[in-house]
Amino acid sequence: MESLDIPPGYIYPAFVFGTLTYVIILFCNILVFTTIVFTKSLHSPMFILLLNLPILDIMGATALLPQLLHSILTNDRSVSYPGCFLQALLIHISGGGDFLFLTAMAYDRYIAICLPLRYHSLLTFNVLIRIIVGVWLSIIIIMGVLLCTTTQFKLCMNNIVDIFCNTPSLVKLTCEDTSVNRNYGVFTIILVQAAPAVIVTYTYIQILLTCMKNKKSDRIGKALQTCGTHLVVFIFLQFICMLTVMAHRFKSVSPNLRRALGIAFMVFPPVLNPLIYGLNTKELRKNMIQMVKRLILKSQLTH
Image 1: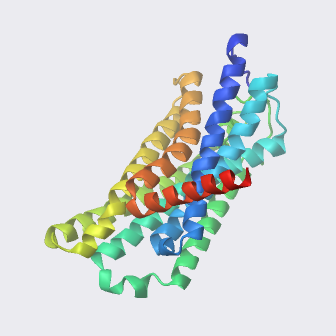
Image 2: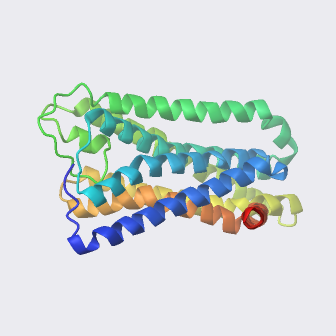
């Protein structure tokens, strides 16, 4: 990989900042995960689907940050091809999985608000498990095939210019015709990013129309509590992912800007997702605060 070019005086501050960022990501996402798991009142379809976001965010951050922190401290940017392939696979699964699970959560909100009387019959436990397993299998297969298309090419370079391994950076190492990979990459973007955008847009149009007809419904008001939060997270993820994809599609984009967007895509969602959901979802926020209080009390008792 290409050198980070961090001035000697900034190496340790960069390492400390990166370590704190990783610790915050782990703490916030593990807190959301454990709060949902150990709080029976949160065992509803919406929160069970939400449960997958911390897993994906921790996966993506762990695929990137420990290796990046090691590079900062040792100035050693070397990585094996299998290690690079694994990092790219985990990062792609993390990002793509976020889109698909946020789409599944939009479907949950659509049924809760537009078809409230059929909610429990349509979203049974078995259906929920099928959705979760289906999303995981789909994103693993889609991203696995995407990465496997890069292995058929003969490498003529060994210097990855991006901050972490990904499909575009691996393709740039080849000197052969990569049209198959590019075409499948476009198909992947349509399937993982564009299709969810269409589905989420449709569900929120239906939700808006339903709310306009039933302004005084308490059930709808309660269901809407998570809609704003969900929409903010989805739009933010779409925006930052779109910028990152465009940066790779246009050769005129500065490598430094491409690096910055890559880091932003991998760091901001794992940090902001648990904070946005934790602060804006009343039921989750209340239980997260209780969980933190119990952890503090236990630590005091052990001392």
